[in-house]
Each structure stands twice: as structure tokens, then as C-alpha cells.
Image (cartoon, rainbow, N blue to C red; front, side, top):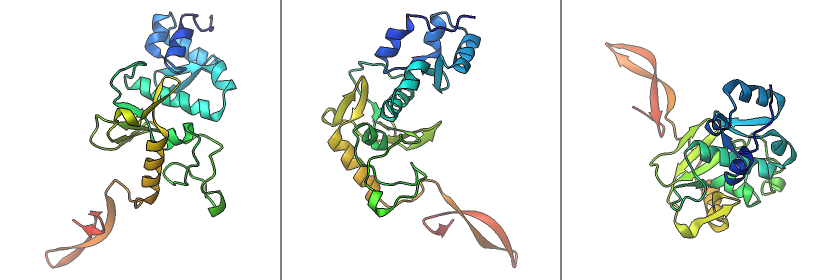
Length: 216
């Protein structure tokens, strides 16, 4: 079985920030089994379901470039195309800060390390665990398959490009990171609290959702 990547996939990967899709591999003659064997052999590196990058390229790049490839994979999986004139989805938050090489504040939602005060604003030496995107078309925050998407406006003056990937520019990213740092760290999901509920002169212990400290 020939596991070499078809030559026609190289310019496609280059145009898409280093990633290719399963559909593009199929059009180039790679079956599902061939792709599986190519991943096992290291010829392909699977970023997420249906999205790959050449294994040789992934092995030789640094952490910053790897995260840029992960962002490209998350964008391509959401039907992003290079050269789109209307930008509605872009890298933002911690992902944009990492690409801009900003000193990133410690945040337990994105990194499990314990930071000392002296190193709290040092540049990260490894890429974030998740991909952070900003969407102008969504009305709520979502997290799925290692990708966090936050709803926010994306005006043209706030946008930049890293390679071919739309990224929030340095000023917008710095403001977003500071806002996240100063905002209260509250979970977006309702918490559960153990409360007593009166039932027919008896107290019954039950689990009841509680929001902002008040049981409902």
C-alpha cells in the first residue's frame, strides 16, 4: 500500500494554513483505510475528525506553528475558506495571544499549571490546550471538541492575518485578555446545591439547581 501523500495535496495544504480535509484526501485518491494507515505511519497527523496535516511538517515545527495549524484545522472544520472577504470567525483570546507572543496570564480554564507571582506574566513555552475562536454569528459561548467559541463583533479594524488565518490584532487581543483576567471567574453553567424541600410535613433531601447562590 502506497502511503505517500499525493502531490496535488501539497498546494491545497499550503493554501489552507497547513491542513487538508478527509474529503480532499478522498478526491486525491486516498481511501479511508489509506488515511488510517497513513496516520499510524506518521505520514498524516490527525488534528480532529476529518482534518489532517502532513506528518513530516508537524514533526519539524515549533509550538507556535503547531497551534497555528490547530487553529487552521478548527476553522476549516467550520467551513472557513482562505480569502473570505467577510470575516465572521477568527482566532482570538488566548490563541491569538499565543500567536502574537504576548505574555499570557494564568487561567485555570486554559492551563492546569500552578503559576507563581514571578512567572504569572511570562510568555508560555507551550501551546494552549484548546483553540479559542471569536464568532460574529453566534449569540452564546460554546465549547466542543477542544474548541471554545465566544460571540463578539469582528470589525475590520480589529482583524489581522497570520499566514492565511484570520486573527484578532494585537490591540484587540490585549484588551480581550485583560478583560478575561479582570472579570469574575464564574462558571457559565448552573451549579447544583444540596437543599431541603418540605414535602407533606416531612423534609426531603434532593438535588436542586442553584444559580448565583439562590436555589430555584
